[in-house]
Image (cartoon, rainbow, N blue to C red):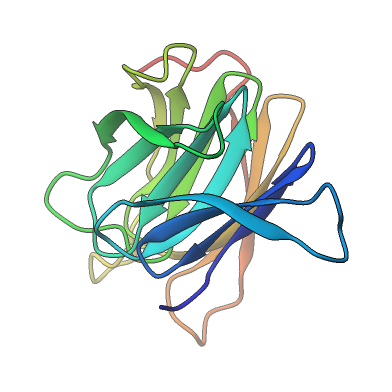
Length: 174
């Protein structure tokens, strides 16, 4: 299946093949070996890894899925959170900072998710960019984190100039 994401944490690489998250042992970087995998049913759009867990969002899904990867040979679903109500995630970008995962998406804006308990991820902040005069959500083109701020670019059409948006998530609250 299509591959959209790869992350390296410690001596393991995490990547997708369609809806399957694969974990490869990089102890011998010239000969990576896939040691575990899990099928989450929808094509993985993006993933991040931190604190013994992988967090994935799938194209056409409404969920962030937390996967326990502390045993790379036997990854398991730890929890799920519905992040989109009424539409599907289509252009996701994930970032992680400690126990916070940030999800950016075209129609969704940016969602701050507390994953301190991966079994019960919780939305603690949201940013929905203003819509244009036709009601269209701007296209968020990825984002970066720095000191509690999210920086993203957005334009309402392919012809509009992009604008830089700075969102203060230093003290997120829903």
